[in-house]
Amino acid sequence: MIRNPVVSGQFYPGSPSELEAQIKEFIDEQAPKEEVLGLISPHAGYIYSGPVAGAVISRIEFKDTFVIMGPNHTGLGQPCSIMTEGTWKTPLGEVEIDAELAKKILGASPPLKEDHVAHLEEHSIEVQLPFLQYFKKDVKIVPIALAHESGTTYKEIGKGIAEAIKDLNREAVIMASSDMTHYEPQESANRKDNLAIEAIVELNEDELLKRVGEFHITMCGYAPTVSLLSACKELGARRAELVRYQTSGDITGDYRSVVGYAGIIIKRG
Image 1 (cartoon, one colour):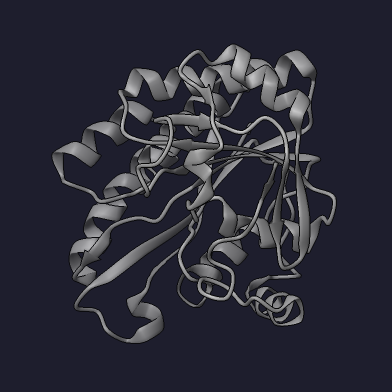
Image 2: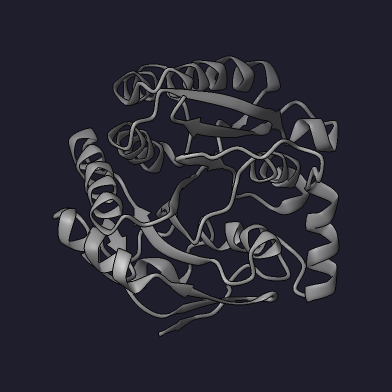
């Protein structure tokens, strides 16, 4: 199956040359590259979240495959949906699904279901792809969309991802696609996002879930992030680092109602 882009020309330029030029503005060519197990990157329109996405993606050593988990904003398809074959198109070309790893993850994660419907209109994975293609034209992906389920389910999926990566001895990076607090004043967004980021940097997925609920943090990708933390810890993660945080207000100058964006890397040591 070919999954065509749905937010090309909206969230990012539809022209290949304009898209590459915009991404180049967000990339730090001088940033030190590190081997990472996983990362968190935002997925809004590039003019808003591009600086954070560019900063975090500039810090990582690229591997052959990215397992990308995003929230299901649309409500379409299965709650926990994986595509195990096909290609995703962007203005920069086609990205092939790593079918071997995807099928291994599906077999190791009972909550996941083979389902392309959840991905048809969902932007959270799509907007990550041009950044990956900018650095590695032949990058492969495993796309997973997660809706509202239990923390136990998210952690089970994460452990299944780690098990599949280990069983295949695959060179892969795991990515959670997430924005942070949505449409609150800057001060409120900063306060809530700091609480979430603190739990993530401590690699504490249970505390993240607790704080999201207790403080009503509207972090859309908390589910992918819980799965990410669970997977990375199974693969030996020992520390995480906030690379960059900012809000839409830092771009527009309007701090009355902002969306937060965080770029975080997760490493072994």
